[in-house]
Amino acid sequence: MKIAIMGAMREEIDPILAAVGTYTSSQHAGNVFYECVYGGHELVIAYSKIGKVFSAITASVMLERFGAQMLLFSGVAGGISKELKIGDLIMASSLCQHDVDITAFGHPFGFIPEGTLMIESDPQLRSLASEVAIDMKIDLYEGIIATGDQFVASSERKEWIHQTFDADALEMEGSSVACVCQNFAIPFFILRAISDTADGGASDDFDAFLKTSAQVSATFILEMVKRLEN
Image (cartoon, rainbow, N blue to C red; front, side):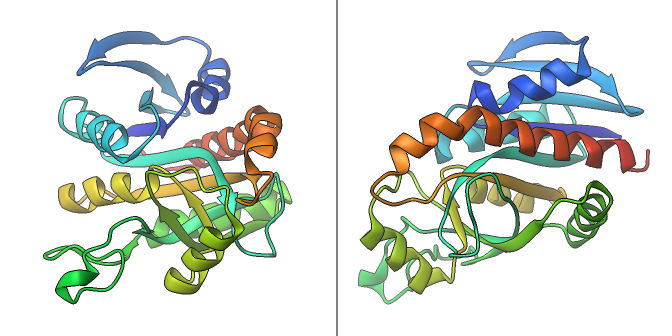
């Protein structure tokens, strides 16, 4: 099977590239894509750059040009749920866009006509992730992840997102990647390690815990790859 593994930042895929060891690289559509064989699968690995536009471009290229049959996203997020602390892992049950607002036309926040408010991730991949977490003795949370082109460092904004979407974590790429996969009918899985708590100290926490949180997420994703059937 050919599997796409995506992150948003270089720091999110560096642990993956280090683990696979040997790979080739090529450039396309303003980005670099790394290819290798790992766990009996062909992998194409890339970081998109931050935000919904770049992540949608990268995901589309991985599916269209490289022929990926599945997409796994590994990265970091800000925690909203009081249960989540820095370093915890959360997999997205569903994803939404918290910065979409066409409520002037009578639509709810986050909704785009001919789209869906929430996009569900692949249930079988979530089930596999639950098995991996048990075997690795890791606490894995499951919940709604909200995406927007904003680094949220405001307690007020965080609370609004929680109340409006019942979201447990937030980041800047997941929902756009989910939208691409939904439209291409490709199974996907979004995993995030909590790097900050999306409040007044978020930027300081993010810088301090980015690399360690990204390592946690990357290790988990690669364990999933090993268990996927060819």
